[in-house]
Image (cartoon, rainbow, N blue to C red; front, side, top):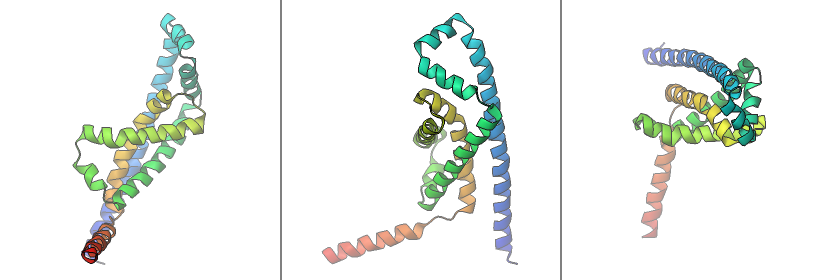
Length: 184
């Protein structure tokens, strides 16, 4: 067997193992975050300010109660799987279109602003329809943590497993050059 292929296969296996471990850690962190928010929410609504909040923002309060009133373990697993699926799809498209190179070169704040926030907004819009939520504030807040971490982990995995498609851009570039020469 070719040593280059063995190295590549080992790299893919290591990346997949790291991705699975990252997925479990992100899911566990998201579940823990939801549980802490559950406790803090119930403490908050028992205070006078919390009661006022319930009357001023009934839709937001209803959405928070709806999310935190579910089985948090199952909700976090379902939502993590949903976010994981979309992050892999987006990462594959970005890798295939050679956009992943730009993602790697960006600083962390720029990555967050240009990639994570739009992805989190996309996931929160899907979540609003899926879970019947009324406010973007709650759905975006719920989607931000798993979206950020799953997108970074998926970009790392896809960078090893999925090939780029530079031939696509080279073909387009050659056709544009040929068109320019023929039009002159």
